[in-house]
Amino acid sequence: MKVNANRCCVFCGSPADSLEHVFAKRLCKRAGAVKYPVIAGLSIEGQENVTRNEHHIEAVQVRYVCNTCNNTWMNDLEAWFELRLGFLIEPQWPQLALPMIEALKSERNKLAQWLMKTAVMFSLASLQGEHSVEFSPAVTQKIKDGILPKDCWIDLAFSKSVLSAVGGTITRCFYVKNGIQPVQSQVMKSGDGFKFIVQFNHLLLRIAQAPGANVTYQSQHGEIPVRLYPTPFLLTPENFTYEDIIKFEHSVVLETWQDCRGNII
Ligand SMILES: [Zn+2]
Image 1 (cartoon, helix red, strand yellow):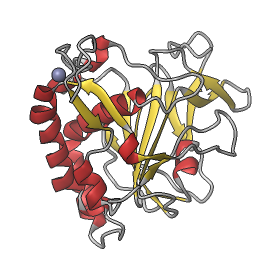
Image 2 (tube, protein in one colour; image 1 turned 45 degrees about the vertical axis):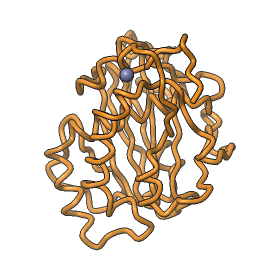
Image 3 (tube, protein in one colour; image 1 turned 60 degrees about the vertical axis):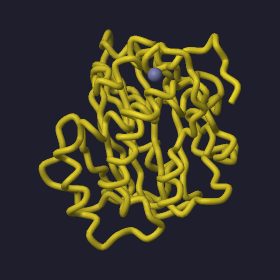
C-alpha cells in the first residue's frame, strides 16, 4: 500500500499509513450490505427535497488514519458496537429492541466515542457540499481518549423506510427558532456545531453539537427520539418512529435567543 508520508493520522498525528472504510466492514456485513451498499449523500440545506449522491461504500475510504489507531482503540470500538448494537443494525428490527436500547444508556460514553469517531471519518470522505463540516485537531485528537467536544447529544430512532442498508449525512445546517420569529434554516459557523446521522437499516443514530441552544423536536405524529447522551431519557418514548432519515434529520429545532452563545449566522 502506498503511504502518503505527508498526511497525518487525524486521531493521533502519526503518519497516516492505513486506508480505512468509513463504516467498518464487519458492521456493513452485519447490516446485510455486503455488496455495493451505498451511502446517502448530502441534503440540500433548508429544503424538504433532498438530493442524494450515491457512493459505493467500497469507494468511500479514508487515508487519514494510522495502523496503530486502527488496530487498537478503533477496532475495539467497532467490536463493542457490533456486540451491543449488532441486532439493532440487522435488516430485521429485533423483537427485543427496547431492552437493547435501554442497555445503551449505561454505555452512552462508548456510543458517543463511536459516533464521534465515525463522524470524523465521514467528514473526511469528501461527500460534502457547501458548508462542509471540518473537525479541528483539538477535537479529533481527543477522541481516542474518549473526550468529546462540549454540548454534544445523541438521539436514537427507528426508521420506517430503509433507502439503503448503510447510510449517513453530516451538516452544519439546523432549523432554528429565535424568539417569536418563525423557524428558519441556518448554518452554524465552522467549528461551532454539527449534526451527523448514521443509518443501519431501521436504526437511526444522531450525534450533534449546538452550544448554547436549547434542543427541541418538531413532530408530525407525536414521535420523539430516544435521548441517550449526555443525560438519557429516564423513560423511552412510546413513539420514536420516523418516516426516513431525512424526517429524522429535520426533526431537530434549536431554540436560540438574541446574543446567545450558539453563534448562529
Ligand atoms: Zn493514529
